[in-house]
Amino acid sequence: MYPRWTAYFNVWAAVLFLPGGLAYFFRTGPFAWNGVFAFWVAASTFFLWLLVMTWLTIAAIDTEPSTGQPGPAAARG
Image (cartoon, rainbow, N blue to C red; front, side):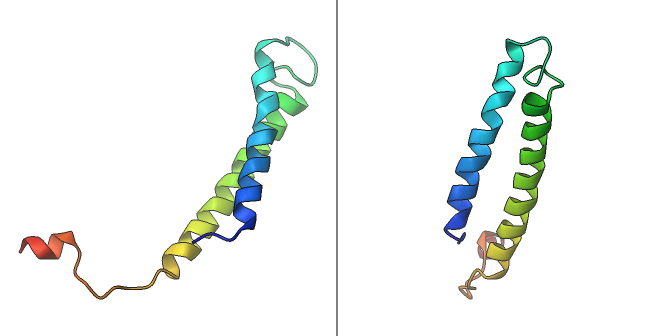
């Protein structure tokens, strides 16, 4: 379904979310709630992940082979 690089991309996205958890411990600086690492890196990573996974999911749906069998709604009658 998904290319191999998608797994590596998801691992890197998870690693880049980790500094966001440090916002609980810092009041100022780059690890604070509005800092570079805790907010901007995590937010940018999330939106990039969302775009990539949406694009790959739509591409996977488009390339899914059709079985030619009716779905569950058609089977009910």
